[in-house]
Structures are given as structure tokens and as C-alpha cells.
Image 1 (cartoon, helix red, strand yellow):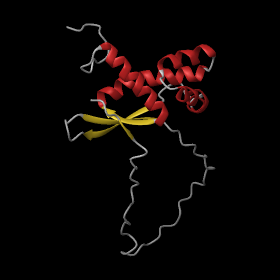
Image 2 (cartoon, rainbow, N blue to C red):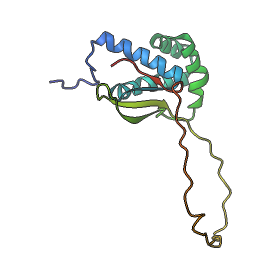
Image 3 (cartoon, one colour):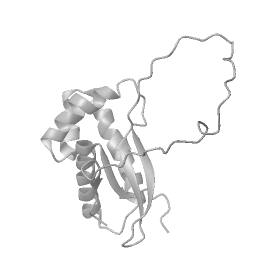
Image 4 (cartoon, rainbow, N blue to C red):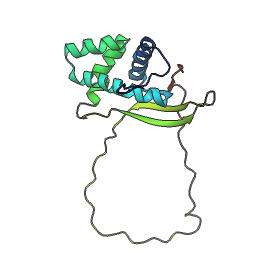
Length: 163
């Protein structure tokens, strides 16, 4: 029994698992979004959020700690100069996991893990309490127009090739 043993083993040795997560964090921070299995995404989330928290600290010790885990110097620079400043006012929760479905080859549940992008919405001034007059619509104008949903290109989403 695995009492008080946290984390998923993912069918790998410890050294393989640590190396895999170092590679995944590097790819995640480089591309800001990756597709992987649910279990890997759930294990990657706390590691990635710790790296962003280090980026928010911004001192030399934090840079060295992040550089000891992330495998690419350009990614460390991006973390401290571009990614961390976006979240300076946010107290946590920098990532989101969206479930995609089942992978056809081995029926593994897939997810997208991505950085949360906050949309800045300007508040509109309060409007008066009056409701606009009702407008009669004819039958042709009430039909819904087809809605186009943008399809992401393969360049935007990086696939995780490890199983």
C-alpha cells in the first residue's frame, strides 16, 4: 500500500519521470500550451506554477533555481521577462487544463494544459434602467446564421510524444 506517497508514478522510474517533467516544463513554458495525457497534465501543473512563482520573485536566486530545472536558457529568459510579469497581480492559478477526449491509438485521455490569458475588458458606464422598446421580427430574420468556430492549426499546439 502506498500510504502518504503523493504523486503519480506513470509507469516510469524516478529518474525517467524527473527528466520527463523537466522536458515537459521547458516545452510548456516555451510554447505556453501543450497537449498531453490527463495524468501528466495534472502532475505538470504544480511544477509549472512553481516556475512561474519563481519568475515573479525575479531575484538572482530564483533565476538560478529556475535555470536548474528548466533545460533551455532562452526559456528561462522568457519566463522572467515575458511570462511572469503577466501574472504579477495574480496570486496563483496560472494554468488551465482542458480535456480533449480519447487518443485513438491507445485510448488514453488527452488534455491541453495552457497558460491562463486574462482578457482585459473595459467596464462600460451604467446604463439607465429603461428597457428598449420591443421590435417585431419577421420569420426570415429570426433564423440563426451559421457560426464559424476557429480551428487551431498544428503549429499552435505542440503534441506530447511520450506515452
